[in-house]
Length: 422
Image (cartoon, rainbow, N blue to C red; front, side):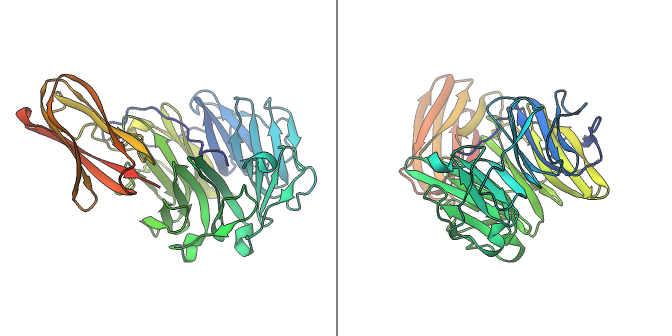
């Protein structure tokens, strides 16, 4: 399975703002939005009944790019390696275009269910491409045109209602994960067989609508909250309880103290910079309904709102630096100690705690476990002006860690959080 595809959004996330979400729908029909993605700063949108659109100007104007697309009931869209390549999952088959005008029907042979919910990367060789369906499970092929072979060993019942797929490959760890109306399934043999892994998921939490990952960590948006697993799905930890969620997004940015933000949306919206504390996203300006898709570019966050199937929905945007409230620096004196962070975060093997000193002084850098026990003091001595990057390695077990830095002569300091996954 290909590594998680994370769209890198570099943005200065700054002060609290009361700015509202504003509609950006010129050129769009009144169709429920189903999926969005960003290619550089271009936004692509799939809709239920209106097909596929794109915008080159931050949503101010949208252009229909349906061409000869065989079905306008779009369940999902995914990017290719170029701005003109899109994989489209529709209610009557998978489609592929490399020019945003001519769409090839990739149903081919072997596909016994053509209500497609996922059409994108799979594993390797014979499973290079994967399809998820609404009731027929998973299909794989060595070519995105097919022919397709069912890959449902271990999947049954509501697990055949596939909502999303992803995967991870690194340092001997290789797995695919599938989100369904029957919970989560993992495969470690190139999508040949699947194992249901729902420990910690009950009731509506088994309705898993979207997944994403960061390293070996997997996040799932369910109809009963947001959950996380760092051990290949063996156990799921609840992060946001009792919320009907449809989607989850990771935005990586070196401006965040932890290097990333996690957003989860459905009936409401939430964000976190450490997977510990989650805060509500201000949705002022949005109509009543559910957020069904989200993406960001370098300037804005875009939300797709579905009101009802008959009434449709719309797309709304807000500057990314106004979506979250964020204090750029934890230290009390931002002139003398700046840019304290760890990166990457979360990490699986190694991360680096980074900071910049504007004045020389005696510095103590300490790392603590989540229960407050000191585990390491990487720095305890005099340091000159400059940027420092201190390694923190895999000698410690998976878990959450806190790091503190103290510049003694100026009596200033800062704290940060980091997470190690298996």
